[in-house]
Image (tube, rainbow, N blue to C red; front, side, top):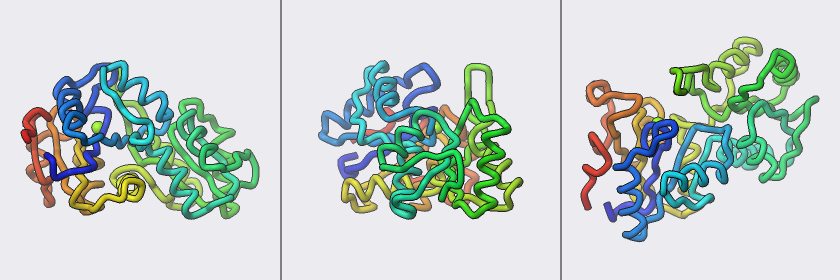
Length: 254
Ligand SMILES: [Mg+2]
């Protein structure tokens, strides 16, 4: 355990399930903090700000530093800063994405943007989608926070950002840059901010196709934990295996 300086936790399905904490994750996080390792959190959620996520974790008794919370919104804004600094941005998204783009100094606009950044927007309507389509067709770059098909709610799976991204892709014939997991951008930004070596980093998650795949693509160790999206049986059939497979996170002993 002490070989890692950046222990990166997925959130939903790994640290909590909707509104309930996963006690073994909270215990591991507390153990790591006592050892002097401050965990990172890596989530495709782009709707919440890091402040809101910090408050949510705190309501579960988990202490988290805001700058250790890497959302796909924070990463999308950082990606835009790296590649399109000073650009005007048309945003489809919620508070988390808005805050992240403004924090990076971007100007938000409804017309003729240089880039369109698309995250989950539960108030998306035809007019908004049409404006984004026109902008992309007119040459704006197309960036998406994440490509998640669906996400879990108390009532079951509902359309995720990826479903809207596919709609836009279909309408424009433009394939966006996707920033969230399984793409490795978020891990890259954590590495850059903390100056870590790749063998000092580990990605922990419940979803093979996003969490484990992101770690594999980035070239760091990975831990799959059961109880979420991907079952152990499915993981065992994958061509590339995670470094460790745990049934719960307290299986990880020093
Ligand atoms: Mg998850």
